[in-house]
Length: 308
Ligand code: SF4
Image (cartoon, rainbow, N blue to C red; front, side):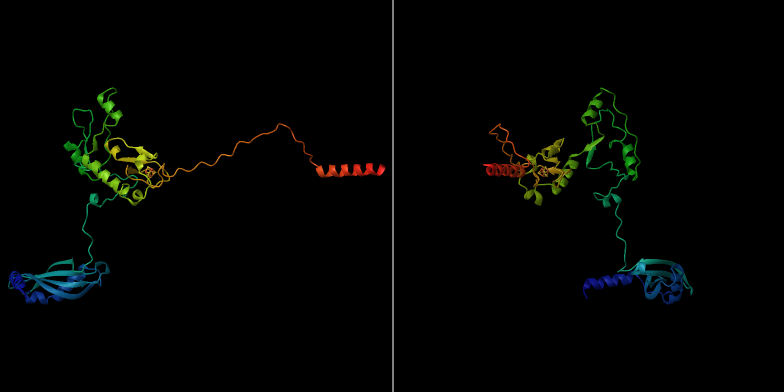
């Protein structure tokens, strides 16, 4: 036994006194308390007794409930100084070393995965969401739902935020109205971090390193099916519009590519038949009943020979 182990055991012994004899013997009292708290027939064997302090002892019983495998009923009993009566302190169900426990709770915002949202679901964004930053609104004052106001911070703290009223449309002819037409009048826009995060995601799924791109005859940048994006991301991404391609409707890296590239394998056109050549304008007459006419002509000829 190592010196450290010896020291540890010595310290534990010093902290917790030996179980009080009368309390340790009160197994029946403890069992009765456990059976009263539990459903009938789920309190099992007495498996241990632990001293909690001076004249305070906890008795442990197996829990036979199949839903609580590895749990134990813990009944604490106590005795007053110089008293002979042992009294009940508390009864609880505690997990043992091999108890089946629920996983640690994870907040919904960390549990959420892409594709988890369904129709009608609301997904509030944090006031300090790193993916977003204040946009240009044309107003001198920050709008009521801007992240720079405390009002918005309070609002997004509410997990199930209700839809807020939309801001008033800008006055016709104002700078804000022009900005709205150009698509820049938004309370918040993607931050640099948000742009990078989106680019990384898209590049992972439809980027140059994917097996599809590695085997492609040419890259999307030269494909007629590539639709350009607006904004700074257009330098690296576009949207594929080839309904037969693997990325139809998805944002693809310009370095991505697939066998559906518009110029990869152009189908040869079917050969055109040569123009019909006319070498005469005469109309040839053909008899519809040639055999019958020939027979008549032969008969007439033989009759003439007979007369002669
Ligand atoms: S068809 Fe293929 S090469 Fe063309 S844009 Fe779509 S993914 Fe890129």
